[in-house]
Length: 271
Image (cartoon, rainbow, N blue to C red):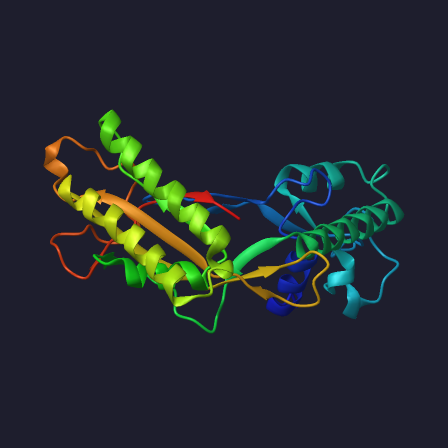
């Protein structure tokens, strides 16, 4: 009986998909017309056959057990089998043990690293909502804790200055939104945003936004922390006016003025 599919999965997971000797990933990326190339091999520590390197010394039912297998690239697998006096059973067991311990430590370190992940309780937005008034944008600001933005490339100096001024205002409002408690303060903020939306519209720019519900994980926190992320984009209403959109589309291109349009790849500002 050969190596079972379950045993193979256990071995590959414990090894992190890396050669235990050279630490290289044992799969190459595919191409547009071809699948990825796998050159990882499940090498036996005690040989599978009587005439193989490091033969004998193990029960037959353990020969294909994951404890008797080590994940190697094809190059190192040949080295191991061609040099059995150097790559002894004891040495290979040590290599396997140290490699799998290293993989676990890397995974534990990654778990402790601060990172943002999607909140599975909320659907992730795929299109931006067209913003024509200050009130809906201000409501998005109030529920968010971080900010990312997008803007066209090849702008005139005046257009770029206006858009950057608008984005800086968004960042500042994000910092102070929690301190504005009165209706008057909130209404004044809405009106200020409305003025900028109007000024941008006069120059044939659209404003779009959405809130992505994220979770901040890792670090010393006991559990994930809700981390709503506001995305705001300014896009030229008419691409033919000379503005080249700076980023590739993440969803089908916007083809007409409606209540939503496609976002572009982002830059980010965080609180």
